[in-house]
Image 1 (tube, one colour):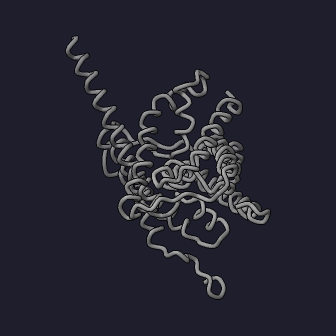
Image 2 (cartoon, chains in turn red, purple; image 1 turned 180 degrees about the vertical axis):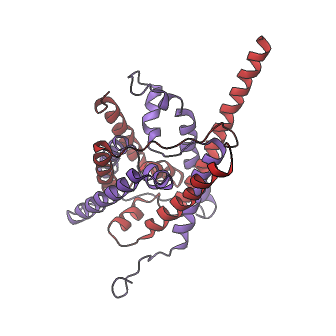
Length: 151
Length: 159
């Protein structure tokens, strides 16, 4: 009995480690793509938003179509992911919070030229002032969680 | 293409498309290996579960995911670093956007992303890839308000 529990614990620790490593490698690809596409440069986002360079649409299109193939096909082709028991799905709500939240997100994005992924990847290209955005994002998330959650 | 000598992609298009595919491959790999949906903005709420005892931050969806979300974020920093030392030929990039814009924009954007349940990656990549109408609506709204804000900031002499 004791041995069974120990094995279970070792297995779940191994599983947690596998998930951590998977997320790390996935993040590396993601961050590499953000740097290659210049999305880590707030200047490039501004160029798009001022309609001087529409490259961001190619980034968004390339990323979402690649992911769409994967999200739509894999669950039909395989019973489960390599290291887990089931396929997660994204929650989707079309309500006032989604609309107001998206509008505010755009205001912040338009002001800074920084969104949550590039704020982190930006550190990898040496863009240290972007730490201010990381700080802002953390504060914004805290204020939202602390004061604007009804339950 | 729009008028005269202007071009839709004055700096070329290959790096945009290739970069987008890399981003998509990252999100796809996460899904293929772990079945997890990899939006980024949730991480900014989830890390508060390490320090705040408020019930909101202690929900399972944050506590149970904070570790892999942190690794995912760490991977993004490393991935951009890999780019810098390889294709980027060691050139670093430091933004000229004023600090107050980075900070305040981050704050408003972070608040909005969490209230609206997603950012450019959550709604723009994962949500669209999931064929969610709510994400399509969110993407259209945040593109519109971002466009408007960037123009206003520009007109009033900001970056």
